Image (cartoon, rainbow, N blue to C red):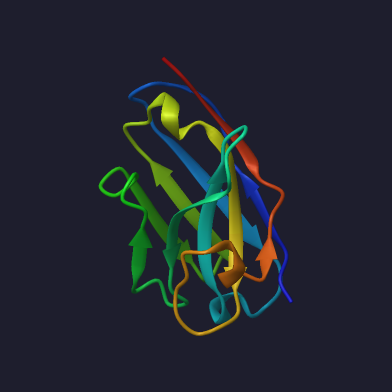
Amino acid sequence: QVQVVESGGGLVQAGGSLRLSCAASGRTFSSYAMGWFRQAPGKEREFVGGISRSGGSTIYADSVKGRFTISRDNAKNTVYLQMNSLNPEDAAVYYCAARSHIGLGRETFDYDYWGRGTQVTVSS
């Protein structure tokens, strides 16, 4: 089992950047693929991106491809989401999730453990 806690959210102007962090507990962090999701008010939670256990593979939603980058540091039990060129449509609560099965997933049901989220607000 793993617990994840997101941090790094806040208010940023359109065009700006923000880096989110997700710290995981436990000594088996490298056994989990990790994902980032987001949920805006009145909308369903949507996939942002994912990273494999080793960090060697990443996948992204088309809406963030080229602007967002996921990375991880297994020695620090942390995964990151670097967000550049933010626009108001990126505003949401961002969630980190851990997946215990092999491979990467794009759906919420692909992930087993979730954080409580961190708010990202983008002003125009």
